[in-house]
Length: 317
View 1 (cartoon, rainbow, N blue to C red):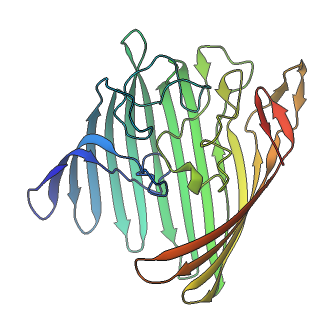
View 2: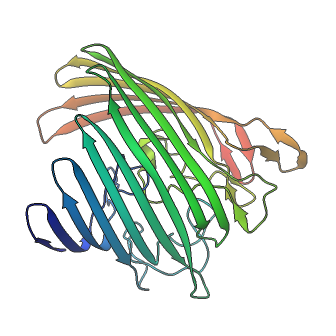
């Protein structure tokens, strides 16, 4: 990677680099994984004391299949990603991004416009546009609110006409200096079984760190497409959590997620019957010890409780 600092406010970077925007919901560097994620891109950035604006252009050529998360492969023998089962790594052919951030005291407002071109087997390119905002409002020293709303339109990686949504809200508050609560929800739209083969209402969260939002066991948007009729059924995720500071270096965190489908789940053997939309409950317990400014230890216990089956996907206790 090479970079140029034109002046105190305007800079440029070109080459393989990390991109990390907003709360890592849509596009980020996946730095919790050992291999992380990088992008071959040209990035222009402007920043002053009140706002920041980034513009990104990226283009991928065909090549050898690389380490799975390195965005270099451009071989699309069959669709992959979260909208369908199987297939090659869902890398883009080209990407154009515009990002804006406005700082207002301790609160901020961020807007993103992300256009991704997927190359089809016949060498045509289908485009999926994702736009939306993420905002953090600091009410006072004890209460803060985080909210996100995104809209997708265009064609997904399987070249299906797509219109989809994602919404999220998180409320954090302290009752005293050592204890902090959080509660909120994530909504990711999904596709009904009766939707046409060339249509999709499934939101693709693209290159975000899904592990951060939908439970630490990675059942959703990481380890499985959780689909029916070849399309993701979406997700309702309600959660409640607490963080207890035992001492300055010790923290205990507990989060409980309740998962449901955002659409009807059809019984595959009796299509006139709908199954229970509840997908399970995830409990995540984390013990955190900060040894120094550069060294941090975490011990995690997670338990997922669910017992259901739809399509080819089954969740076990």
